[in-house]
Length: 443
Image (cartoon, rainbow, N blue to C red; front, side, top):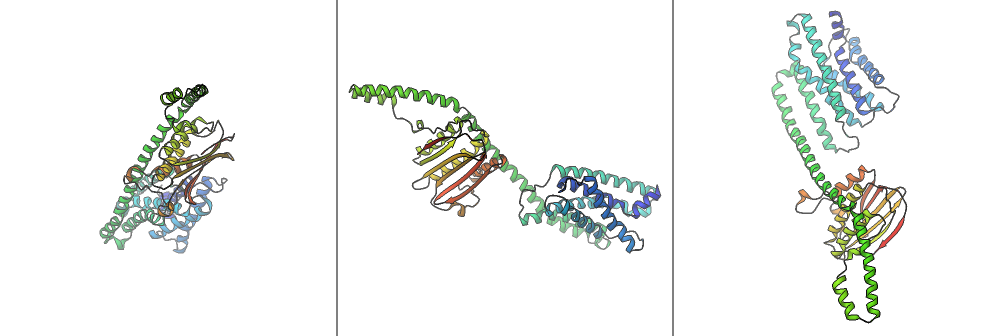
C-alpha cells in the first residue's frame, strides 16, 4: 500500500485526478461540438496531456525531484483545460474560463483547509499520514462530483450578452479565492497572510453585496412582471368569453334590423313624431362599439373592439386593415398578452399628441401572424428613450409592457421590433400561425 501511495505522490496523481473531474465537468456543461467525441474519450485525452505536462515533464527537467510551485499547477490546469475546451466544446471562452477558475479555486481552498495535515507530514507515522491524505483526497473528489452536479443545474446562459465590466466582476471572485489559497502555500507570504487576506476580503465584500443586490432586484422585477402577466391572463379569461358576447351582438344586430324596418314603416306612413320618439326612447345613442371589427375570429374581435373602442372614446383616430382566418391557429394567451400591451401603450402615448392616430394592420403570411401597430408621435421617442423605460412617476409599478411583450414573443419563437417612421412609433410583431384568409377593413 505504501508503495502505491508513494507512486501516487511521486507523479502528483491527486492533481491529475482533479483535472479529470474538471475535464468531465466542462464536457457535460458545455457539450461537444462533435457529437462523436464521447465524455470519456475527451476527459481521458485531455487528462493524459495534463499528466504529461504537469507530472512527467517536471520530473524530466528536475532529475526526478518531487514537487513543483503552485503557480505551475494553476498554469497547467487553466491553460490545458482551455486548450482542449476551446476547439472541442461549445459556449464562449469566457464562460469556460469562469467554470475553470471556480473549479480550481474550490480545489485550492479545500487544500488550504487541509493544510494542518500537510504541515504535520513529518511529525506523524507515515502510514497514518498516508491514510489521512488518501481520505481527504477522496473527500475532495466527492466534493468535485457534487460541484459538477451544481454547475450542471446552474449553467451560465450562452445567449445572454454580458457587459465587459460585469464580465470582470464574475472573474474577480474566483481569482480572489485563488489568491487566498496561494497565500497559505507560499512560505514567503505567510507572514503577510493576515493583511493580504484582509485586502482580498475588502475587495470581495462590495462584490458579494452587488451579487446579492442583483439577485434581489431580479427577483423583484420577476415578481412585478408576474403580476403584470397575471393581469394579462385575467384579460384573456374575459376575451375567451368573446364567443358568447359575439352571439349576443349578433342577436342585437338582428333586433336592430327589425327596429330599422319598423322605423322605415313609420317614415313611409309619415308618422315622423312617432318615429322620433321611438328612436329617442328605444334606440338611444348607439355606441361606437357596435361598429365592432369583424375578423371572423371571436377572440380578436373582442380584443380589438374593446381596445380600439376605448381609443375612439378618447377621440383618437383609428385605422385598421386586417386579413385573418376565422380559425386562427395561435397561442391565445400569447396573442392577448402582446396585443393588449401594444394597444395599451399606443393609447397611452396618443393621449399627449396633437391629432392622435393609431393604425393597426394584421395578416397571415408564411405561417406567421404579422401585426403592425403604429401610433402618431411628435418626437423620436427611441432616440430620447432607447430602452423604452416608463416615464410615469410611479416607475416602480409601471414600465413592464415592452419587457412582457419581448418575453412572450421570445417564448413563442416569434419576432418583435420597434422603430420610428414618418412621425409614427411602429411596433412590428410576428407570431407562428396558420393561414386561411378573410378580409376586414375599418376606418
